[in-house]
Length: 84
Image 1 (cartoon, rainbow, N blue to C red):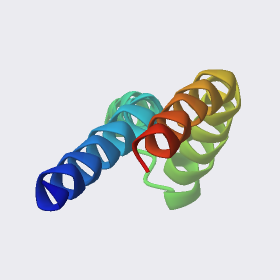
Image 2: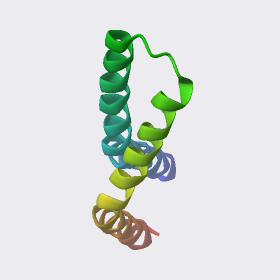
Image 3: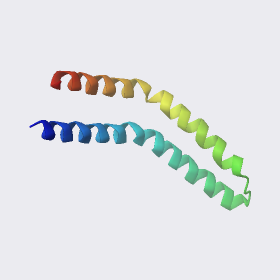
Image 4: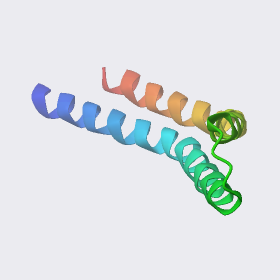
């Protein structure tokens, strides 16, 4: 019984971390794709041109989804405390 609960808690934690990280990573991937297309069209191969916009967009996305992330984490913590 204890092993089943432990496995379920770990599985839930992994799924939760994927759900939380997915919007931020998706924003970085989209911006990276757009910047790389622009770089290939214009033949500008500056590394900072690719890195700085991705950082800015990913920080903005993290700030935008912060209330949702906090809500999910509070729900998960409440579920863990109910189990224990």
